Length: 322
Ligand SMILES: Cc1ncc(C[n+]2csc(CCOP(=O)(O)OP(=O)(O)O)c2C)c(N)n1
Ligand SMILES: [Mg+2]
Image 1: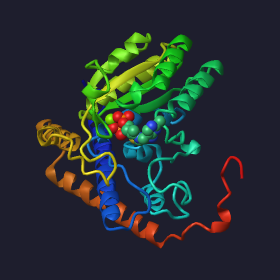
Image 2: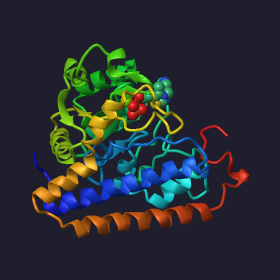
Image 3: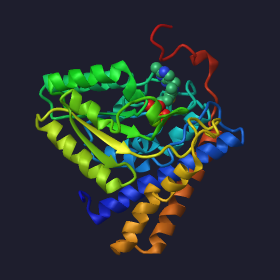
């Protein structure tokens, strides 16, 4: 399944690689005690976060979650702003108020701020889709949601309303087999979360979440359908959470063989294999892209660590009820 040219695929690879290098650096900064808040790794989710958001247009909006670092990057939040945020600095996305990916957003880039209570970001995301519909604007709203979050009441209410309204809304379910320490089979009695879309009259598809071409192709199709009045879609991306829930969690409850199996399906290595099989890029370019990403992230660490802490006098700025 192909919806990207070779040039676009290389660009997508660069975003995925940057996501991985930045994610790894955030984890190591946290382990060195240089981070301020907690941190969530999205390792293994790069093909979903990048592939789905790369399919959006500049006027569309998206509500990412805590494992969607790649989505924030593709939409234009720079590694400098992300790292300054992780380190609690005034130059971070939340100006030092929320030192992790839980809570960031930027409406000027079409990113709806992440609401910590899962999956509450789905409501404003559907609200945006309904506004586009009522104003007859050819725009689409996308929401990311986890497997665990799909077992809540709100998820079903949002899907139902989206279907009734035929809203231009795309829900990307990141089924990474765990919700904190709870495995799938302990929180749902079905095999496929896509069934939950169909139950509400929402077009639903299942895709390999570690195959960025497949994620992009299915998402691009859903976005095009939504934009032309065809209503909402749900895309279930099957993947695996490769680290603990947050970085303090050693995830001893995850069977080691599961991680070994999914490590073999790593989304970045998978794309590199495609490059070599199709003779799209040389090994030297892969090396060059890796170095470029490391330089960008080194610069972002330096920027973040030399940024000032927030001024206590600004404490009440940007809050709803000071
Ligand atoms: C309403 C609510 N209950 C509990 C939490 C705490 N919590 C944060 S993430 C998470 C697990 C979510 O699992 P899933 O939706 O599968 O996403 P994943 O972390 O696996 O990407 C929980 C329980 C929360 N944020 N919101
Ligand atoms: Mg999960």
